[in-house]
Image (cartoon, rainbow, N blue to C red; front, side, top):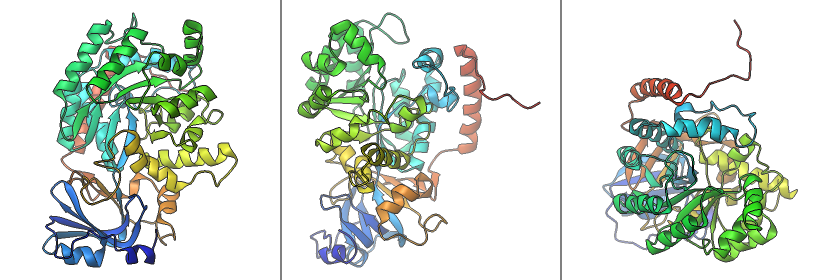
Length: 474
């Protein structure tokens, strides 16, 4: 609902006598509520951690007298963006360094694992600080970690200091070789311990396995059972490339998701990272089980994994499946910017279907906000701008040269024409974490110097051999 319709609807708070509020944020408001209401001259009132009023600015300002006021009608106010799959450590300290012409799998075994194997607690916290700071700066307020953190308490400390909303996992695999592998009992014990130690209002944990064919059937079943017992979710990587399909067919005689369904692993508690190479039966299993798929399209293009040939994610969306978007890692997707991901996903959907009507920017923004929140089980708290929800809010400054004149449809202009660089202010649970484009409390010069030193040390310890694909000029 746009324009005058929204004004007449009066997004009403249902309160005529006024509301207590600390802050009122002015701007054109994309609520992403059930009606997908857009309020051109709108406002959002915040008290503590929560949204207490949403509506036309004239009404909200009258109701929230005495509150501090920020922003202007030229700003764009949106719900905090949700990143459903992000590696927080390892890659960040060698970001955009892994050559993009390696054979499938070589980047993992020749670069990523050697780096993770020698990652120190300090490295984990520093990496997470950098990634989460970039995330917040680009409007990503909720991050779901991919399960490759060795020192989760240090990563949790980084998130708490920055005020980021984070769900974190830790290494879970029982292959013979590799960092942080263990027996089924050891891995499940580590997961259980994490769930008991990190369970706060902003920073929480979930069960995570590396996935692929690097988990025994016993481990997959035990992890799924733990997630169900603890009323949380299980996430793991599966089928970003054809390798997992080939491996499962060789070992079990059936495709990966068919085998996992037979084991009882799939379900609404299950979050499948990637799931690019599927057949019709596997798509149907995702839909019927209620499992979530997190699509990270930039990673698939960066690594040449075939997303433009196997765009089953559109089929999942068309079937009413649970879908979210992810940025992945700083060597597979590289930039931690949800809007870039939403734009790419939207473009792929149109192009692969050879039908521009099948999917649009409004749907792409839904996956980055309310639909992503629903898929990941947090829509009762975040994902839309509604009274009673957490005040996770992003303000885009539309005074920059990329914005004027303001388009007839702000969603089209936001997704196609802009990205996280126009973010000015960000709130998480009512706390300002980005102000005037600067991450609050982040000493950027100091952490830049620290990161450069840590990167050199990490490369030396890991034994990786940085190369360039281009000859250097003398």
